[in-house]
Length: 336
Image (cartoon, rainbow, N blue to C red; front, side, top):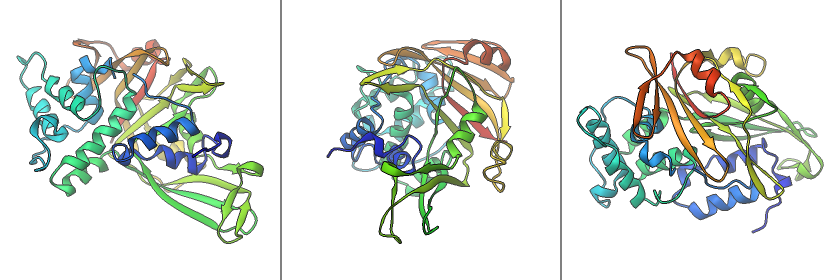
């Protein structure tokens, strides 16, 4: 199947729907990568650096702190059951004498085709882990509860500019993929850009069911609900002329924000106040690199810097942003 990239602008509803298939990653893993290659020419990058960074991998990628009790599915062995091994890793982290409580969990991911011999994209691994939890957990309601912690529900709206008919395409994201522009960006600008209404015409026209032909359209997303944990993914890898490069532009981000203020001109009814508690950094290039992270501890109100097996009390929020805003790859906010 050949699909011309020009038919799917980076912010079109169809393009974003193709990018919002994390819950089907394992089921159609090859097709998922084909979609990405055809539409955006992105590839899988960096988890080699994550494989040693145990505390960050387990605590940051999933982010929920309460103890969750479940039984593994009968058709999945203990050593390859992701939710079971994650539970054990979180429990082992309570013991300060455990030198590497994450190793069994990483081995489990390896058995689930997230090989620690190659590099992976951190955002993709996050989605695959949630997908595996949904598949392997014996309690579907609990698996749905975990996914709902990150679920951004939106209504894709496609307005035909000829007959004014509105096509609704409901979907959801588990992390918000934001494009970067220019040398300096703010998180608020990136979010507003994501939700801006876009006009598609000429070769990018959309097929209208009512007109029964392709028509110019305006497309955009309307937020239906926001999650308890808001994951932000900054898209730093860009493909041009068959080559992929990393964007090293700086992105400033607030320690807390209200989505209602950010999208005041686009959507007046949405409510969502968030506070930053974790930031993942990517050092290196598009083809290889290394992940580190800052994690905020609510108890002592201190930021900690994690780099492989090294964890150190670092600095205040302002210094974190000033020093590393050009390497930010993912951010996590929790609702206030």
